[in-house]
Length: 280
Image (tube, rainbow, N blue to C red):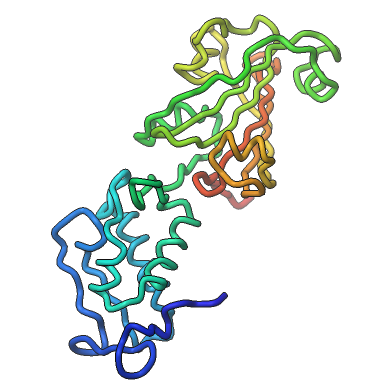
């Protein structure tokens, strides 16, 4: 990888090095405000670690511990570069690395904004809507499709119905704090729950099932990854070919009946699965 800023042309003396104060560190910035220009940031020019990476690590730590709050603006790139004695390309590379990680986003006319950290979802039988609420996020749902459909061979096998038999299909775009997070496609046995009107927009499917007296018991789940199609990229606010996490889940009630067959897509830059592994 080409590293800009390790030999910084804006500094004086040896290329890429400017001793500021003792021990070759650029002077820090007092902790007094909410943006990056007010953080106590320091770069060690005697270190073999690239300057942009040193800066990116400190900014990432500040996002993780809340010194850079979600929703806030990062601050002025030019001022940050000047205070640390770095070139703008070096600072820009540090910021871009965090954009690529999904921690920052550049918004036209607004600036660089801090995003929430990735949604970390434990592998248990719960809905994304409920997991977001538990994590203190604000979930919202846009229903893209909600209508009966004839079951394909794969759907029929999963739900235990005849191929061509009518099942309920619902497709939703789930967002967290107004930012697209997942594209959810689900098939349910016909008449299982009432999905009329805008009922599916205000809550999760599992909550609706429990409200209808259905006891959720277990599920089989497969997690994978693939690249976004052009249509999926538009829906999720990603670029075509961006990495997506996939999840396919078949859920059963207390009687062993299949009650949901879901195929979900998640933005890999915003989402992770947590596994707990036990020794047998």
